[in-house]
Length: 338
Image (tube, rainbow, N blue to C red):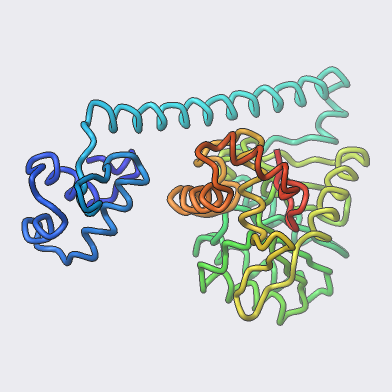
């Protein structure tokens, strides 16, 4: 019932047991719930990170549950703040799209139809992408955001990719480095390479994007939901800017790493950790950080906690200050996008 707050079933069971029987220690909880002591300890660690459990006792080994009216209320407030942030971002995106369409409306219906076309829904998006793929003559550039790709997405892309590469189209794709957690996505990327495509990975990507022959680009109307709708953009100025963005990210991205190890810079941090630092410094929430990196919210929180511990920081603000003083915000190998 508390999964929406980030608690898994086991951690919730331990928390409820601690509230009901505050006299039980770790061993008592293990006996009460029929779980190994090690799993009780892991659940307590999870609860401690969420400030739902405190440590106490004369020997330092005791644990106690934080009152729900304090701990759960705080977590609920955090989730509500995350939701408000997502709603704010969506409102900003909608306003930007509305301004873009309004600008082109003022330039005349004929010009707008030539430069910007709005696609509604996943079916229309896939149909138009199929048309563009079949008429692509020389080059395709793509950002594949969202981390591990769904089986449905890869199944829809496979025949188009194979047909284009068979015609000699130069294909370059940047995936998120988090695809390392998806054997199916890594296998698909290696299949592309075997057919002649170039594939790289980046710790963060600004959005999903595909550019055909440097003349036509397809981008989502809502960067947080690529299935909601898309814009087909033409015109030298618009597409040239997107091509420049792609080239910048491509230069910073790295080839698929056969041994699966993350790169580390002079600070000893991985690209992914640097990207998290950059996104946190920009004020993004855990949910936004997770979406930008294509990882779970739990993973984003874990990386944030590890960074704060390494920096000796008690808050995210302090972590940003210390990271800036050490030059870590400028020292990352991968880009973090606002």
